[in-house]
Amino acid sequence: MIIRQTRDTLSPIYFDALTIRKEVFVDEQKVPVSLEIDQEEANAIHFVLYREDDPIATARILSKTPKLAKLQRMAVRKTARGAGNGAFLIRAVEKVCQEMSFETIQLGAQLSAEGFYQTLGYTSYGEQFLDAGIQHISMQKHIAPLERKKD
Image (cartoon, rainbow, N blue to C red; front, side, top):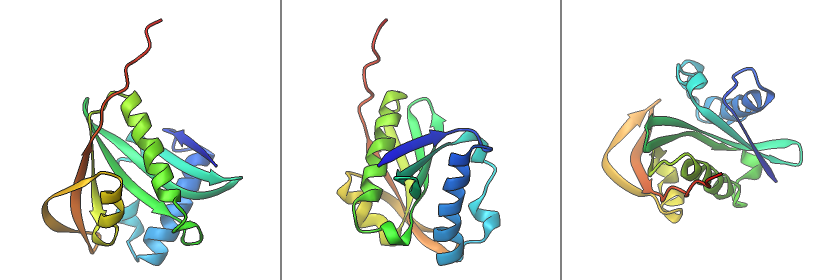
């Protein structure tokens, strides 16, 4: 398994991320494309987990402040669920966040995924809210930034 990342919205990696998001959010969950693809696409770092050459999971992060990252658009293809792929991707994204000196990762979890994120150390806060017609809860995790090596 390999994880690739990009900020380039013309990259094949980004198009693989969109393919997964379309399958999961638009086709399965009936989220309108107009809500799924937003104005933040070019501002995000997009991650794709590949099994051999097959893209199977995706997520993106946005920098909200120098210490706060927002994890969004986490999706795993139906055929790749239940095998730890989502957790593997989240841990890799967290490591990148640490390398970028973020101290907190926030996300809006679909209620059906709240338990998944809790197993990865995220805690819920605030009231439930509706996003794209789906109930969500805000969650966050505090992380320790990695020390940068001095040259």
